[in-house]
Length: 493
Image (cartoon, rainbow, N blue to C red; front, side):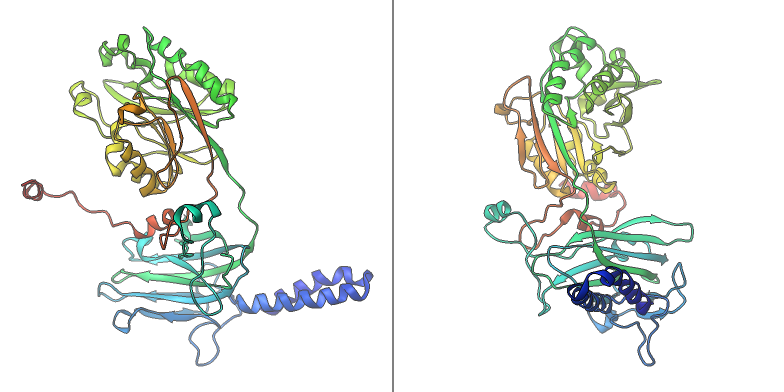
């Protein structure tokens, strides 16, 4: 198959040579040699690339483990994999803590983009995201780590250039036969000359993984996903829910003027004014869709943007504090029901939500949380676990340090809209970047601030943090059971 690939390149390169003379012939020879070197360096698990006698694995691949005492069993099945083109198998016995991987290195050129992809099938692996992962390590010719590709401004702010830490390709869909696609697209660090690919199975007693269809090749850069995130800093003062909603119309118009893609409004907007807040919540709560969502939906459609707003929702006998996401077509994309309730809402009979939905939009994945949710790391983490890149946060008031923490610990953008003034030190209407830094902040009432960000660009952290967002799924703890009452009693003393 490798020879067939070379022949294909030869045929493609030879067509223009017939009419362009000696110069083109020289270029052809150079292209041929480059193609041959690239293919030879990028040996993959192919159908006709079977091990030679005495070598248990295809050329270039080796089995690795941190120590012999925790080394699992390795094998290669020539007819394994979803296409019977060959597969690596790693097996663990009943002992805990075994760890091993198949490894190969591939020649790369700094600044180019490469795509990794593999198919993975598991048997008796309890936690695939932690146990059956792939790492891509960047090295120079000496086998040493290299510097990461980071903006000069970041280097100036940090005072150093971070190292290029391992990449962690993400799990994709799983087909009917149990094969999961694991893939990622990466920009090669400027000083890297090779990428070391590791196909792991770790910490999986009696588990088995099969790796196949492994590809590592140059690709085109990912499409930029720039989005303009806006927050509105306004506390309504109307005498009715409708008047409160209407006060936001000119502010949404201003956000549209600033070319915002997403606009976040405050918490329980229809009933936030003093005149309406005094009414009983269960009497002012409304269905979703309902009058308020219809009104904001019309504005979203008029200006061609997304709007997030919180309101009290009635569903049968229950009342929720809900946030809604409205699309540029004016339709309801989805809603989130506040999970964490302060005692004041509990005393009024508000019911908690239980789900953490994340919604696809034309610019990326959006999650929502409401006010008190921000005091607890679990809500933002659950949204991040489900792929949220931006979290919209209508919030009456909260410690702004928690806003920074929720953004930083998940490497997501958070857009908050509050009813507090900055001088109070109890929340900001702001856009927080992936490091937790406010990159746009409202200082005055009835204003709109906008920040443009690129969701296609991961943030590479200082020193050896790397792309922490991609590491979260592979490194975060396994789920645990709720602590027993006795444990809680002991810890409170």
